[in-house]
Image (cartoon, rainbow, N blue to C red; front, side, top):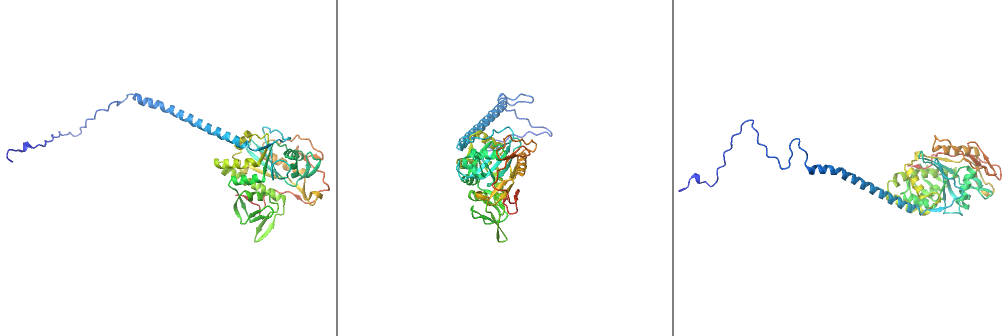
Length: 410
């Protein structure tokens, strides 16, 4: 174009790149402000941050510990409040619990207080050192002198005079010192089982008891609610169906004791697997049962909490069960069918029960004074022998373990 040349191009020509020599390196950019060279100390802010993190960790741990203590304190306070609602009675003849094993009399009855008959009597022996427990079942119809009455009768009638007479009767007739007393009403059993979501028992055959209301239409592992669990532990006319025919348990009161022991094992399993791992269920359990349980005045809230903590891992392997041997006497005058003691066998059973919780301990002999009509037997245990209206007769009933038609925990 006229008056123009290539030199008039408005786009500047980029400068020529300088040739690179083989093996040469690019120049490193200048270090950023504040960067330290080799061997230099970290800047002040970095050192401050490093010094602060242990302090923050300690503060965080202190806050966590304080929070846990607050929760524990609130939980303990709530337990004290709830357990403080349990009905308490004064029991005159209780023996102070020593540092070793101690005994708790467990009674199941229809209601609370006096004027009633015990339906279930179990002495639980507990050893805090070994964390073991053993149960001694006393038959409902066990015939013995009733403390303070001057008469002999079925031991279940002792509760008609209140918990003090019940405890005194067990102590004088069996030579077993009782440290604490716990009574649960029938309604309490229902509430306890329901609060746990039921108990699981394996029935080899369908079972029923038209008198107690038990009805298990199919065999296998069943979850019993509170009503059916109560019907099981009260069943004295237990029947099972095999090959289309109904058979009756011929062992009577002893069969009921076996089923009560199976129920207690299932209950321990349920508490271990369900209650202790679920705070909400634990709260429901306590709230549902505090009004249906009676304990002695000496069984304080602190003791209850300590026992719960000490035996929170108690499993069925640590729960040994025993039943007092007796001699059956049918139609014994005004008393009806009763069970007479067999002193020598009773003493042997009591000794085994005492030593079961702590095999390494020496079984301590009781210091109780033999009552009228009692005889002292070997082993240091006093067994009361009531003067029978007539000579004992009938077959010796020693029932232990389970039979093929008994339910078992599952």
